Length: 150
Image (cartoon, rainbow, N blue to C red; front, side, top):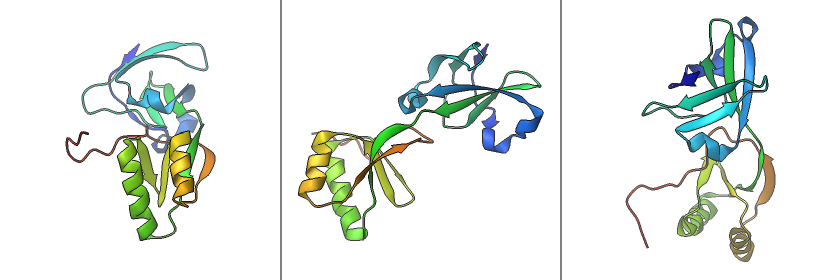
């Protein structure tokens, strides 16, 4: 079976009405438009998303009237920065922008992959951060407002 669109989010489904099969992906896999997966029940499915469709943690595909395939995302260690004020947020955003690293900003925190160079710069600039095991809802992404290149 090949799915071409996300039918719903698990949080919006009455899960008592369905038998749920689960697939756990890496956050990087959420960026893929074509992927073959194997559920926790051993069933193989293809996902070839139509234009404009994106995978996220909790994406759901209806297999039939009684079965749903749910997408989960594995946890990963990330640098988590919680700027103490807008000044620190601006400085941090400038520093990270120059590294061209994909990030996620959510709930006043900045998330990015563990990188020793970034850790060194944050330490030198006295910007507090932690390394936390996080499950991302969406993949880390590059913030690209214009076609900026060096």
